[in-house]
Image 1 (cartoon, rainbow, N blue to C red):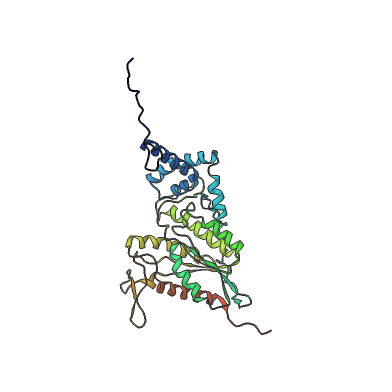
Image 2: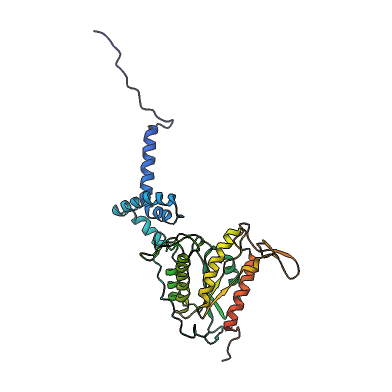
Amino acid sequence: MSLRPTPRRRPPERSEEGRRLHSAGSAVAVSLLALSLGTLLNAPGVRKSATIQPEGWKRDLALAVTSPLATVSSALLLDRPRRALKAALGRSQDDVIDTVVRVPEPPVAGPRGPAPEPKRERFTPERPLRLWIAGDSLAIVPGESLLRAVAGNRAVEPVGGVDARIASGLERPDVFNWFRRVREQMRVQRPHAVVFLVGGNDDHGFMTGLPQGRSLGPFGSARWRAEYARRVGGIMDTVTRAGASLVWIGLPITDDPEQTRRYDVINAVVQAEAARRPRVYYLDTYFFFAGEDGGYTQYVAESSGKLVKMRADDGVHFERPAGDLIARKVLELLERHYEITTRQRRR
């Protein structure tokens, strides 16, 4: 009888602590599974991110990939945890793709033009002027300056802070729907006056939320201007028909001449729509921040001759002194049309 050694199997590899080691392929498979599950759980947010990208092939490709993922996620109810978490955080609208541009019917001017200005209204500490400040990222610095300027005035009551939405505008309600937001705030907050600055992200030829069958030309074309005017006028009418006045701050000169020319197109539309409506006041900021030659300058001389930095290094946004200047001009407009007194009535 031959004594052959019994073949031995190679024991599984173990770590120093005695745990079994898995192959690299297993780790990759687990990682891919986790990534796929995570993508499906977050599919609504991924689709929203794809939707709000700038127009182009990258957006088209992202939508082609993420739309089916969102459909599968919804069918398998894998979007429910994210939805519940967003609701708990008070951000239920984060993943909503809302492109509805709902605006009031435009006013019909009679043979004598727009209605006359309303009688000057009086506000006191007992009946303060409710003020709502909103807009894109350009609204942040002037809005904060305005809040500081009225902080000690009990005849003015800001409703919330500065309601600013970065990268938003009137072209892309899928990024943020200002038409819905303004309508909601006029109903909920009931402000007497609104200060609004938007348009810095609207200098493009791509809009979402177009009425069915309506085509759009390139930026600045007649069809583009007509649609943008409809949207601007709709915001204005939503505010004024709720009984409030509106100060619309114009876009500033920038360090990019081409961008400034595009901003001029937007400002022209806004200024024309404001001129058609009582209780809407357009604040032109162009020459607040122009140099002696009429061009862009980052520093502006005070009355004392001291140069003050007014514009941020990106050549578009404002520094605090610029915000303070705009806030003063806004208050001058408001005080021209409202009687705002800090004196309380004697009882």
